[in-house]
Length: 465
Picture 1 (cartoon, one colour):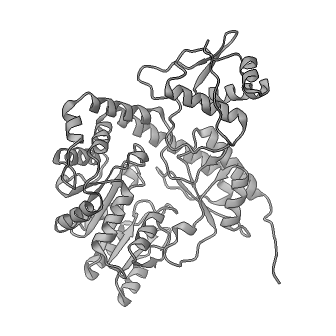
Picture 2 (spheres, rainbow, N blue to C red):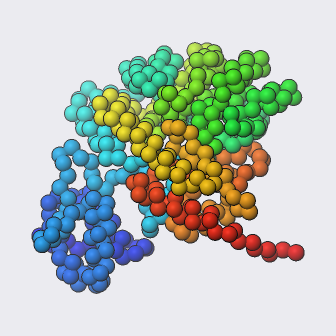
Picture 3 (tube, helix red, strand yellow):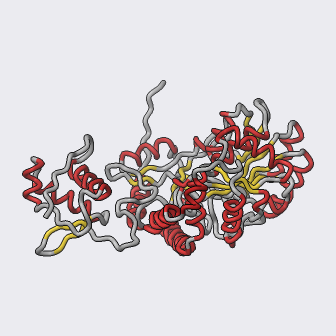
């Protein structure tokens, strides 16, 4: 039995701080797999807390899989299988006192995420050639070999697979910034769906570009409305997520895709097609880059398929723009770190990455069914294959109020305001994400809390005359 006496961090319930100290000790190796933990009363005396606090701490650690209880024997650090990741690494799980964060668009947690990265890094450290390559400068777009490997992976997902047109980026957001700064000048007009990804809104602001919000409906961006706006002044570029609008989940119809491409050619508009919000191939429409390869820049990344922390993505561009975009990348960061690119490539090529994606598709489908059932009374919108729920609020409810009330009850959601392009008014709705909850049971608790709140009559405060 180990003589383990933790040093507790400040803040939060003591039982949780003890459990977190236990996880940190396991991660450092201070507590080894199979070691027996101190009896609860003994540890309680050492820390000056009640036995009940230690009981809760051990139960919390067991719930996370860090320890295991053996009847009549005590509590032990869980033995992991040889190829398992560190047990307390759970991608995308926020640290909080019982808060369920379904505000972030993250893939569902699974041990294969940590295991895939672990294997990739071990493979690199075992290869002198890979280590040597990781220490050297590469072409700003990435080495030819790494670009070919990423293109092959994208091709297996039904995405652009021409390595000669592909630049490796530090994630999808980096790709957006590159395009905004390389293809537009301060003061230029840039268009997007009236509700769009906040990362583009932010990038446009930082590049001092003028926003043009294009109306949208259930079929996505309203191309007829865009044509009327173009008649007055066409934008320099248009950003869109045609397969899955973030946050509403709307999909651009095939007819509108064709009209959009024709309009872009007529007015010489660059199209930025963001496909980072991954959907199974059967749930996608015709890519804009297939319809207009000469003016479409396609963005993808590993963040919704493998893990967001990798910060590896791709930007597929028309041939005539390649040098301009390479120059922009070189001026920002010279190149994407070859070590991280190699880790991503090895993970992509790991057979378990395919198994992980198959599991993720099935898991999100199950979570989607759960959410649509629990929230059926409110008309939730969620596409097949999507991890986003767009929830219109009942009459009398305001999104900011609902967000604040849910936060008090331990659930974090997103309001529409960050997604508004320019000064567009925000609808009264909230966005929920199916991915980040640790389990379906956790997600079900969050959905129940949302349902219970919306079943209550709205408050009617009045503070002005």
